Image (cartoon, rainbow, N blue to C red; front, top):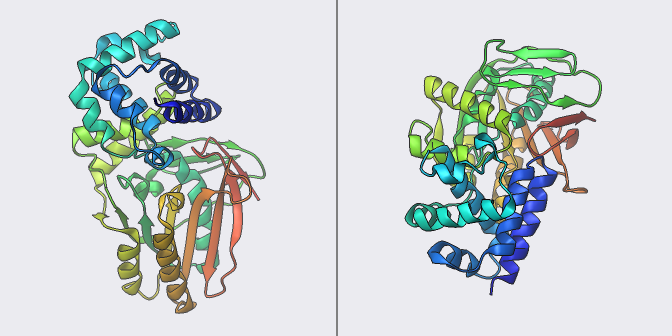
Length: 347
């Protein structure tokens, strides 16, 4: 029972380890080896419907649920095995405490497993910003910005973050969100950008003013990456102070309606990050069609730019920053990057 789910856990653990989270990799590997079906949580995981593991990311849901117990202070015994609590336990102790936590907080974990993972990785803004800089150079007009798959809408405030890219800096020097990716190449040109308005949508948006929803977002930050958690907390503080314009909507429907209302004298910027792969094929086709139709109607006074950080089509171990600008569309790759924005390599 559960051989395929165990394989899914091991593979996800290897991925987490390769992306800088040795602890999450270890946790998922230990779980894969030692889950025995005790209790409702383990039974549900091992009996997860066939063919849905990758789409549902059940291993990440499991890891997120345990981290939520730690972050919320609900389970001090489990917290002692986590990095913030010392993290010095061996595999036997880690699993004993994790499996006991699954039994103690069964209802909480089962409810947590009902929802797909959501992240709002603020470091991806350092990648996207290169596309925004290109759009500003190409058009010279204020931005009308539309983000799809925005999660909690935190990256809507990308212009309030501080960036150190190579030798150059940009943004708010007093920002609680400071992005300092490893820069692999010549320092970029960073000019002023005028944002006239910014809107976003998500099928299941998170409201970070709600402590429970903020906890869910925080729980998907891997426990041994405190710098990511600090950036997220800074972005949450900005969002709570400034607010977000975030709609609960299907990306295809919302974007089609928003593009129909795009104003003249503005550069419309459609953007997203690590989102496209989660869309059904039909939704991808509808979104692409809506953008291309709007692009066909674009002119020098109402240009359209599509900026997206998504898995590189030829090597999915890294992301690419794709950029298309209408009225003269030509898709370009502006940079490659780590999925969490740890490094950026301009093209």
